[in-house]
Amino acid sequence: MKTVRLTSFTDGRQCLSYYVDGKRRRETFLNLREAQRRKAEIERMMGKGLQVESTEEAAQDASVQYALSQLERNGIQKPLSAVIDEYIAATLALKGAGTLQEASEAFSQKPSKIIPRKISDLVADYNQYLIGQKVGDLHRQKTVGIYLKKFAAAFQMDIHLVTLRDLETWRATFTTTGRTVNNYFNAVKTLFNYAKDRNHLPVDRPTEASKIKDTQEDPTEANPFTIEEMAILLTTADEKSLPYIVIGAFAGIRTAELRRLTWENNVDWDQGIFDLNGKLTKVRVRRAIPILPVAEAWLAPYKKQKGLIIQEKHPERYPTTLLEKHKLEWRHNGLRDAFGSNRCAILEDVGKVSYEMGNSPAMVFNSYRKVVTKKEAEKFWDLTPANAKKIAAEYINKTSNLS
Image 1 (cartoon, rainbow, N blue to C red):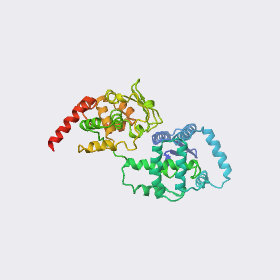
Image 2 (cartoon, rainbow, N blue to C red):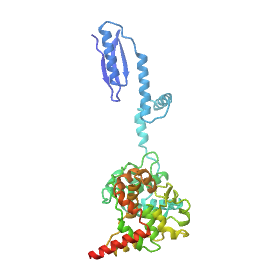
Image 3 (cartoon, rainbow, N blue to C red):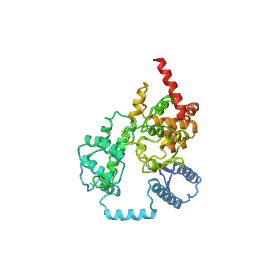
């Protein structure tokens, strides 16, 4: 019996070849199963001495389907006819001097016209750009004054000379948390994009910084203030510090965001919300956070207040001294963690808490869910002036008796 040969191509296509009346035929298929089924059919017809019907038209259809699938897989949104026209035009333009792949590779390696710029000078340019864009001082100072300043000190060269290996070697020197490392490199990636937009880097290829993958971040464990610690903070804080403690713990607003808020523009007593527009929040998304009863009870004396809610550069310093008097320590992010943990315990709604805090639901779920019990949360949200005074007095009396 005449043989039917099956050949597999590297791109996944399958090809059958056989002879009919001394003439070679070839049929192409997109998958192995279809090719094997057709091979068995041809061999059965040959074995019975039957004429093998031509499937040339079917083979052509298969080739068209393969071409369309390849275009879709590679994200090329052009009609097949346009691709064929371009192929013919490009092949004729080469005049036999090489293949299209060779020509495209040579073109991609052609150096772009760039304007050299030292990284230190580029950082200064970027700083002025941020000022012109009216980016907040705190964000700008952190991005430029910390992240990019360190980058410029490590790389005293033109930006276009920095390679992926250079960046990876620099990252290996960091001993900070994954989140901090990612903060540094997000700033660096933004600087590279800024340089690319101004022709300091090739515009026709990805930047070296864009090839850096984020470092894995360990889940952040919540470190909320206890009921007793909150009671002491609330009852011993002075007039300037109290809003910082109350809004941080009972509204969960970040310190950096809180620094930008004013009483008249961002506290809507009639609607009962802290109104943070997108220009004030970390992720540039508006949040309307409810003024919960416990917060309103503490902030009642401030209803006619105007101006910035907090003015201190380091508002946590004074509350820290209040805790130290009672041999307690300040908890980094403790106010916001207290809000997230106790809000989750009461609402049991991660989506709502994530909106109020301006975090992702995954972050809220991982960091704040089941940190405190519902019973503890009920006490937290009942820390009115009268209750807080009672709890603080009981704690002070208890610890003084033990000393």
